[in-house]
Length: 349
Image (tube, rainbow, N blue to C red):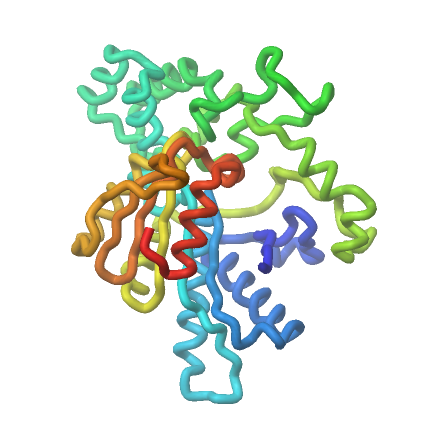
């Protein structure tokens, strides 16, 4: 398994020339393709292996974009036997941003109401005024709807947006592994998830992510040595705020449309995530208007419902992971491993 830290400058990765480190979704995909091709040249023994690309959260952009770059690279070199072409078979995205109109804040406002996180009076006001919380930075918010959104934010401020039934680390006397833990706000961890117009920047979001164990592990001398990380590389950190990255308004739904039928595509979603809620995903999937080939149904793990799954024409699968949240938390659930393992093995779930 190859892990890519993207864009350059995050984690252990480096950007030696800052003039080359102003990123967009497209530029990031180009860099990721370059990294993948370079890796294959260094480890040529893997060239004949099948390739699946995966990621979560903003990788709902990264993964389809680099998959499209690989597809276009392979197409451009199809007639050149001297050029290595990655054997791309499919990609999978967990709780990933895809269409800004349906995902993130727009979906969370709707999800939170049906999970009783705020009251019917505010919900009705939001709908009576046709509040539009979609867009990369909620560009269509009126002043009235912004006020409603800030009221909503205040009501859910102590809820872990990444797992609404989970612990919000940093609040109260929740059990901790460290006395002096390092936490991050939702604005640090997923700055795109709650972005109001720039003149109304939101602050005070819940410090729900608990970063010490992974930060301490990856910065230990033994781990850095084992991974051959030079001493000149900065300490690994969970979040980095000084990256020059412009998020595209287009999202990645168009790539699913371009690649339909060419590769296997899995979109899976932990159903307790508020950052990129499950409830937003069917919006853009239904917009694709692809015929259903296998109807919505539960899948089981050890006799329990572990989630629900549906398949559509074009080798596309949508699945939920019951009781799982966003990113890392959902992989604490064995259902997620079961789902992905069976998908990769092409078994019926």
